[in-house]
Every structure is written in structure tokens, then in C-alpha cells.
Image (cartoon, rainbow, N blue to C red; front, side, top):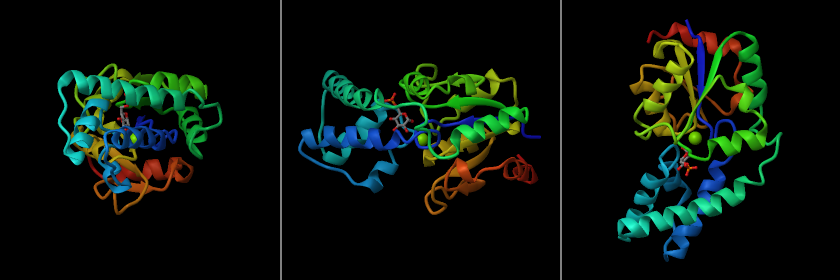
Length: 219
Ligand code: G6P
Ligand code: MG
């Protein structure tokens, strides 16, 4: 029986994926190259440093560890400037309502995000209290597709992995759910999130009925 819902943040609850993209693009441009939106899919759910490594490889640029730290800090400063502007009500359509609905129905909720800025974003949106547990980039050592962030989320709310559903917009996040033995709901396009149990365009299209229908799949 499904007892908990574990949510990625960027691209599922709030559209910060677009700010990550803008900040990384600005950084790549400052180094004299660019990357595409298709390449950007590979950065979703991936930690700050791992994202930087991929981007530098795309640009054929090599940097020392110290330079990489400075570049990651620069990107984060641009990104934090953008997310400071986030206000209550800027959740993605249906996100807040779905969280409220499942909590009323007795499901546990946890955040499972690779972002070290998750706390600021939830605070600015005023929705921190909609999560029973918050596991973010400050509390994990392994990036998605490693299941650590979701295993910790399930554990924090006292639910088994096979009683948990992960909501994810990233390929790496769906892979993390599979590796953790959890159900997965892809948020986005079925052609991209091919391994998810089901795919919906956004949380506005989720319902308790759809959640329960996952139980037909054995985990
Ligand atoms: C999320 C995003 C990634 C981002 C990562 C780290 O998983 O999808 O694009 O790189 O968080 O975010 P941070 O805010 O710590 O740089
Ligand atoms: Mg995401």
C-alpha cells in the first residue's frame, strides 16, 4: 500500500529549473561557449559540482579544483539572486493543492531534492509546513541517480521504499526511484521520462485515484 509521496523540488513543485538553466548558460557564455536545452535535460537533478563538470566537458574546457569551486560559487550567486524573487503562489500549477489533498488523505510527504537552496525556496513560497521531512543537497552525499535522497526521505517519514512514490521531472531522479525500489511518477514528457511508471504533465493532473492505481504495479 502506498503511504508516502516524495517530491523533487525543481521542476516538480516550482519552476526553478529555468533559473538553473539561465545561470548555467550565463556561466558557459562567460567561458566562451554555449549549450542546448536538450543538453540541459542531463543537468536536471544533478548536483551543482557534477553539473559544472558536465558543462565544462561540453565546452572542452579544463579547470583546476580551485577554479571550479569559484565557478560553482559564481553560478550559485546568480541563481540565488533569481530565487530570492520567488513569492508565495509561484508554485507550479496544482502542486500546493495536491500536497494539501494527499496530506488530508493521510499520506506522508517528504522533499527529496539535490539542491542546497531548497530551504530558501520553500520558505519563500511559504510551503515548508506541507512536508513531514525535508531531505536536500545538504543532507546527502550521493547525487541522483543514486537513491540516497529518496531512501532518506522514506526513512524520515517511517515508510518503506516500496510504499513510497517519487515525483520527478529528471531522468536521473526517475532512475533514483527505480534504484530505491519505489514507484515513480514522471512530471513532463513521456518521450523523455521513459522509465517512469506513469507520466503526467504536472501535479495539476494528479489525483488520489491515479496515486492508488499505481498499487496495481508490484514493487
Ligand atoms: C536540483 C536541480 C539541479 C541542481 C541541483 C543542485 O536537483 O534539478 O539542476 O544542479 O538541484 O542545486 P543547488 O541549488 O544546490 O545548486
Ligand atoms: Mg527536478
